[in-house]
Image (cartoon, rainbow, N blue to C red; front, side, top):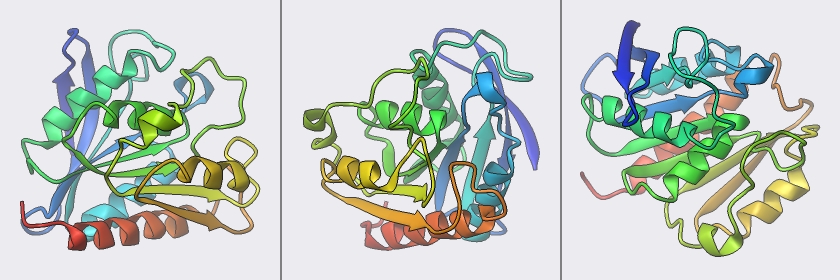
Length: 218
């Protein structure tokens, strides 16, 4: 694991950790963590499980802290400016593997990742875990269906069976607006995926494998 720093377009220095695969990278991936005001950071167990699984499948993986979190500079932006952080993380992982780029977001990070992906064609594959649909958090709303229909890239929506923030029925309704969406519900767990982190990471990794296999050579 290599500590890295990189800078956003508005001059904010972010901290991250880069994990490279054993051989040449099949793809680059960026992991976006949960809400920084509620303990979210790159060091949550689900993020560790994801980086281990994806690196084991041949991806270069960058986990980073959003602005204002732990050693990242700047201040929390309520999800509105954190899209700049995702863009900078993609710039950094592209130095390892230019394309394809996989972006994985959990909770708050899923909201930011989806909104950024709508405007960044470099995001070839998107995995959204516990996408917050039922909440009272001060974050930007879910994009409208008309915007989502333009997202013609493979998208995974993963939720726990008892996720109060990302109820399975609401997740399925969201997926109906995304042309190439896959829904996976993990039984007997909730938003935090406690003790099911490896299961969730394996679902994401298998989805990424299938999506990469479908792509033409980059």
